[in-house]
Length: 328
Image (cartoon, rainbow, N blue to C red; front, side, top):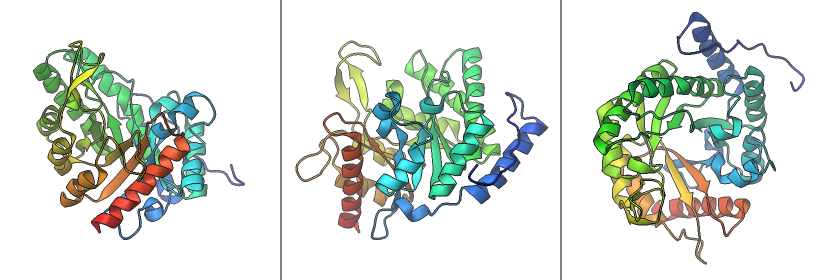
């Protein structure tokens, strides 16, 4: 343990918020305050940017799935190789570790040793918060509790979740508002935000997603605008499979969402010779973001095939820095 030892509280089980759980959260918060101190501006774009750059772990999904690096390596790589001191985790890469005290302690110490701040955890695969089936929906809500606790423990302020469900747009929206509300009530006790990304199905529809968040009506619930994932109609008629034949206007969506945005996901796939993103006009997009008064984290999420993960991340970071220069 790097030459010293720290005694941490034991993780408790769900769903009840027991005295042990409250003690765990309180103790973890105290530990985080002491151990997870990191310079917020470590990943900031230059020239007094109106946002700070963070790095989304999904940018390394090929290396992670290929076991070339591990989740424990991620924050160290972010800081040492890219100079980014704020990170966003994906739960898929430490799926069975949400309640593993030893593992989370090691991750937190690595962040502390390298001056890295933990910002959020992206949570997938824990059930449908928008399921019209109440029993399934409540189970999904309870499945997310451990990730709220893990986020709190690591010093994050946010969990990103999905608002999926099977049924009509109206039924899923009603169910998702309920599921998100239940989860947000739990998360609020830990001081954690719950945000939904446009991540496919109904959530790719800007109007639907905004309406869902408005139905929840909680201050700790918001949106994580992603510059991809705006398909609202496919040639198969299926919500998930098939060629996309209609997309929601991404610039319109982001403009609609920014009043409730609690972060931004700067997704990139391809770049032109000048280093600009091919699929998104970053200058136009960030003009919208800046005009909204947004002050927060913008997470790099490179997902392209033509460049290596390293090249894609560096080009996205350079593009964000160029945007700041142009908009300052």
